[in-house]
Image (cartoon, rainbow, N blue to C red; front, side, top):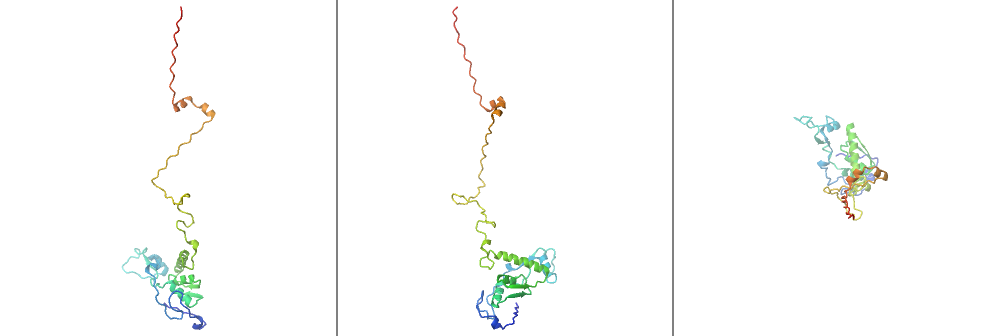
Length: 236
């Protein structure tokens, strides 16, 4: 990695001797030790066809005896050599008291992330227009992720969703007001049908109703047997 410093002042005046902000040592030292490279999972990956669009055909390695159509959707690391973490660049910005940075090979934007974290002005020169537009989206996604990460300079407590709440702040589960316990819906529970309400008829409707229908709806009372008339003895 090559780092060039431009200044109109002497180095001893420009760089006061102070402890490094992230790594061990002092800013006057000429080496930074114990820098952990980025893992393979942290590298910027894109499908092969998007990588060719971003870098161009001349900058992409052609694989022999492989059909380009079969690997068009295969993801590859865009900048496999970009393994320096943004913490290293943050250290360089702090140690050299930089007020502006020009990155001539931004790759996946690790130096740009360091400038954003320290609120330092920066200019990145991308190789293609596709590289510039995609890098802008990548840095935007990085900032959105930093909003909810504690310890980040972009951290905002209101961007962290509380446990059991969605992004809108509403509770996802119903709570019992009396006990305070959360209710879980029981899929096996059967709901009983509600009883039908009896409709009340007006006096006019009841008079116009067919008497036969009323008799069918009610249980008929047993008819009384006629009493036998007593025989009277006539004195003839």
